[in-house]
Image (cartoon, rainbow, N blue to C red; front, side, top):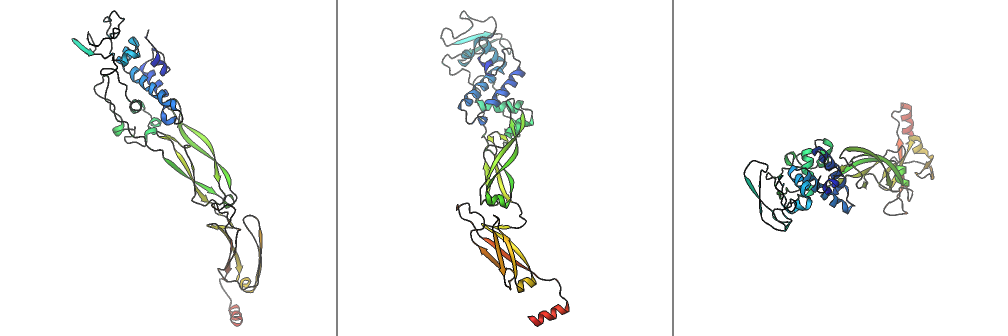
Length: 364
């Protein structure tokens, strides 16, 4: 019968749990309450601290025995494993009288002879000092992760497991109040960039594109899972190629949080129009005869308006006509648009007969 079950309750296990069960329970609770997974939950940090302290004590056989026999308060005030048959009249608690002094115990682990332990009722000096919860967590993951999906959390750090050389060393003293290893700096969340093909009509009109993405997350047991998420990507009228649309915290889970995802707009090739800044350009091909003697055409703009062209000729190769306010919307100037430009491409014949050449010479 244990004196209290508080630490076991923190890990949601029974007092007779094995060391393997303690490890599995701590992994689950630590992943559930890790502050990097609970940025908007202020209570998570305290829960993370409590489950880490519970693991630190219960995973150490001597500290666990002391806790089982005398409770957490005794351990925090300076308790050590109490040998069988050495209880005093106060029920086995050397602090019952509120005194401070030296207590000699024989038959302690490590061999014969008498060892002296100093206890402090004031919570200082010889009292149990819990390590930083992040150090407990990182050391546990380094020593017990054993799986690529756990180590992926720390992939931004050196050593593959989050620490130089692959692990964080414990203090060799093994007693209460061990020195705490310095916690490694939490890496910044990375940003992933993905191309987003957009048609010229979508850039002209503005729209929302639904994009299905896959992202890797960790569940409460620490297992790496893949989930599908659908994002509504806003395409603002007048948006240009190369524009970036950022979504924060929607990518894979990392130690510092979840990756940001940035879509980079790419313009799909249009069969008729090309874009030049805020202007839309269309090319009209003319036969040489048309360019010289005159021609008629009807050209349709991107928004369906029709422009009638009637040229008497000659039309110079490479010449153009410009129509204001019929081009692309200007995103920074609502209500305004660029130009619609018609360029003329004169198609010269690839060959002429001697007779044709003679007639052209006579005419020109």
